[in-house]
Image 1 (cartoon, rainbow, N blue to C red):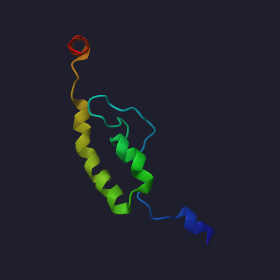
Image 2 (image 1 turned 90 degrees about the vertical axis):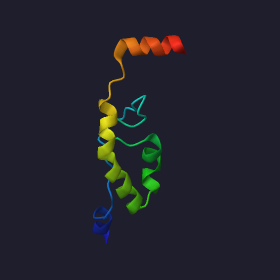
Image 3 (image 1 turned 45 degrees about the horizontal axis):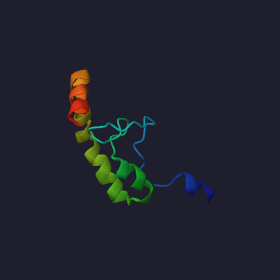
Length: 80
């Protein structure tokens, strides 16, 4: 009976322990989930977890967009 605990058929978290939220894309740069998805993960049903995992690869492109570097940062600071 004890072995069943360690052999659960569960959709595992995509977390890679690089927990940094991208300021513009608002997703984790490690696992590509939103903060809401990360917070809710333990409460999600298996089909909901699979849906999140299916969507993750399409989010990678959001992190490749350049934010504009120093000039864009200065413009944002001066605009606000």
